Image (cartoon, rainbow, N blue to C red):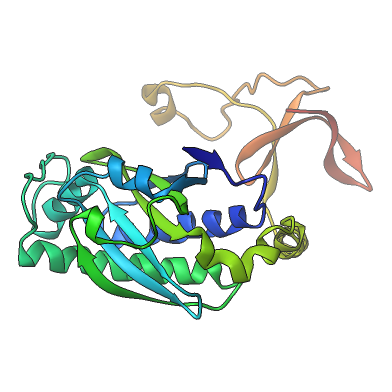
Length: 280
């Protein structure tokens, strides 16, 4: 049993979007490449259903979100673990390395814990506009039945991010947070995200104002002529080159090197000038 929460908790979407952006940067430091991270629909599921879907062994890291009660759980799937270990130990990122079905070694656990610490810090920053949280890892677990972050029939928030990179095109991470943990934040999450978007709108206005003052080079191209290198080497003073542009134009006007307008040549206030006649 699962159901979408995006309509019930609209304030959650900006949190997930911020988390996805931060995670993309963090994973780049571990994978040596910038992955594609996409936020999948956020859902609520019974904890029993989650346990049934998870394999064994599986990489699970339990974390606290103080001052909220309870524990969250981070799951890293095998394809991403294989790509991470391949890169971390100097292998070829494009070579796929399947993770054997066994308990993780101490070295593998240490690498995954380093990744987990970075991920929960990204999660903390994503929640910051809603609530200041202190996210810290508690323990590593491989058997989902021993994780116990909720009772079997309790609903759990499922935040899933898809990850695509060289050597891993079906990876992702999943964050599980018990529904009761969100109780102190529920009123804020039920509010629409207009307040979240306001700073972005103000930032956009400031950016447009700053760009309006930026200098750009504008040039009028009177014409072009193609010649062979032999003819170029034979040019002398007094030679005439046809440009293929008549007295009425059209003249191509370039802005920062890109053709943006067509214009007609003329004179304005005693200076050579062009009059814009069309937009490209």
